[in-house]
Image 1 (tube, helix red, strand yellow):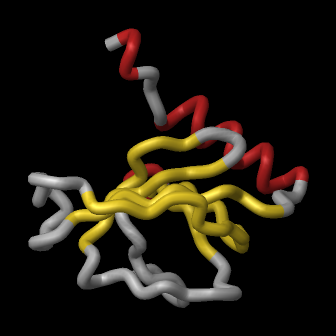
Image 2 (tube, helix red, strand yellow):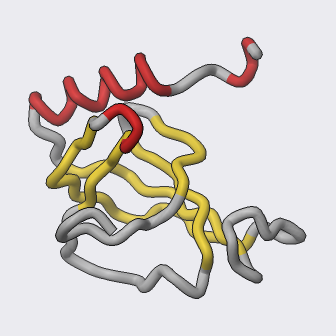
Length: 103
């Protein structure tokens, strides 16, 4: 937990339009009207005040790498990003992600 935020899960995919996370189904509750924070803790970077809506949520069959018995993957769509948030998001994507097709 980081202050007022609770850890949601590990980011699997991210783009300017949204993010998907992998999580232990026992730890995440379905919350409405909450703000999210995207963090890169080892770099001290965070993007606070995000509003997102769930677009997908499913069990990852046969996978327990999230630390629980049942792992899920949830996709979120960003809502109403400010220009400052868009810029920080762009920097996070540019500096802290890679394209797996080039690895």
